[in-house]
Amino acid sequence: MNGTKVLISGASIAGPALAGWLARNGYDVTVVEKATDVRPGGQAVDFKGRTHRRVLERMGIIDDVYAAQTAKTDWRIVDEHDRVKAVVPGEFLGGDVEILRGDLARILYRRSAEGAEYVFDDEIVGMRESAHGIDVEFACRPAERFDLVVGADGVHSAVRRIAFGEESAFVEPLGWYYAVANASASSAGLLTRLPDGRAVAYGYNVPGRLAVLGGQKAPSLFVFRAERPDYDRRDTDSQRRFLESQYKGVGWRVPEMLQASRDSSDFYLDALARTKMTAFTKGRVALVGDAGYANTLGGFGTGLALVGAYVLAGELVAAQGDHASAFAAYDERMARLTKVARSGNAGPFLAPPTRARIRMRDWTFANRSMMRTMMWMTDKFATDDAIPEYSLV
Image (cartoon, rainbow, N blue to C red; front, side, top):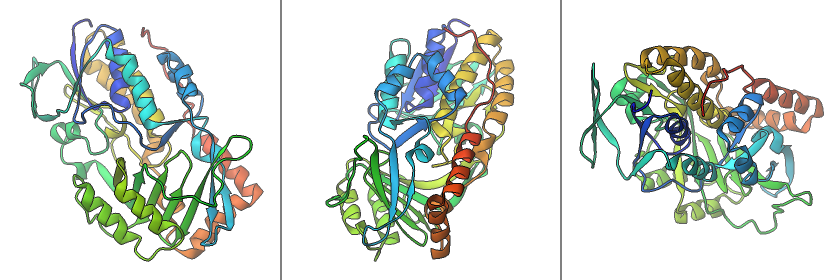
């Protein structure tokens, strides 16, 4: 429906993907993002299976994604003397194609910026819905009325909180936490690239703790178990203190990595969590990506975000302005497609809670038969579900 005003909150992955689809199909689209620009850096994300590939092809970005892809990165799990205990292959970790989150965000932004208006350094602080639309209040710019609002603002979605209710009703913390820093510790003495061009990262475990150094998945990655989130989500210094308190006394290269994280310009810490939603719309509001279907480090989020944006745009265009009908169809399709994100917890696999569990995880990847089984499981869970061939331009 030409002229329908849509406000999208979030300019990372799901938001620009949806903005591109809607703007190209006649919608008046505004994207609001609280950051001052498209965020660079971040860990690598990946795509796997026929459905992901089909959506990338329909979007017209598959060549750009492959041009910017990272090398396959094998994780070598080592002891404190750098002796290899197991190898987790890049095919298990990285899907069919892997790309840095910031590079993908920039590709999606370029695809959508000509047709959509982007407003950075602002955010939604209030919404009031009526029969005529949604009146939206912003932190900085004047209030404005839109026909539809889409929350593509991550697992801590402000749109979800305002429209649906408090986060605790929809998001389940999993008891593990992770941190990513863009400045890695010195890797002197560690091989970081194989002769065939594959990248190598090195992981070290103690019970309930993982530290990964090098590679392109994340230059420095920490995954750990903690009883409670003793930090302020909006205060980076408190997040760094929380991380360091959890790794106090851990050896290997962890002290160097912690020192590097203090100087990192791109530091991020959060809980591993998954959403508990099977309906992603309410009134004139819809959720896309992690705002509706998150499972942190579960390996499904980025692909589901692009699939969700494609399905929502397709249903809106097919419904020719009947957003209630489009939202109902979107809910029905995505409840099935997001089932894989509503179960599982990557924490116990990455940072097993006991030494026995660490040994069992390492044995799984050292045993060829078990390795084949694990690879089969990753293929089985790949998103190969049928999705409609929408009439989108």
